[in-house]
Length: 154
Image 1: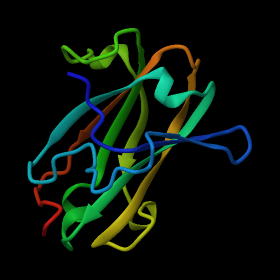
Image 2 (image 1 turned 120 degrees about the horizontal axis):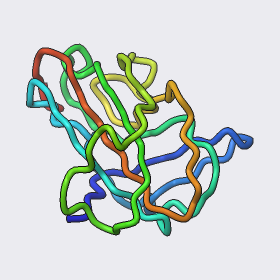
Image 3 (image 1 turned 60 degrees about the vertical axis):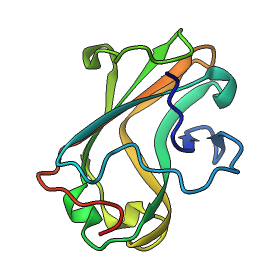
Image 4 (image 1 turned 90 degrees about the vertical axis):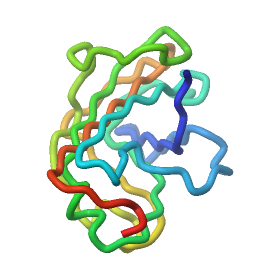
């Protein structure tokens, strides 16, 4: 099943150019984690035709809508992997060892464009840039490992 649950922005090293995946008309899309779980893991596949870019990816941005005060305290330890895929849907998980770990850190309040609680864009600056060749689909895997649960409602 093809998973595109949110808008994804790819910020690039070449100037201040930003490539947006999706039309921008989608609203209330969620983060790539399940905040109500103690830990969560997800994989999303973005088609090359949706990205339409070749170059270095330095950050990812996810649209968020958070209504609670404890969200960041209980959902801040993230790992993000990126990889390339030839298939146009996810039938099975990609093995994590086939992907490049590009972020392993803790989210901070300043990573969110608006206040928390609130709405806006979460921008994660990658520890390692990822070169995207433009002719393959992009796989984004996110693992949240904070020992605690909340939700976007609390």
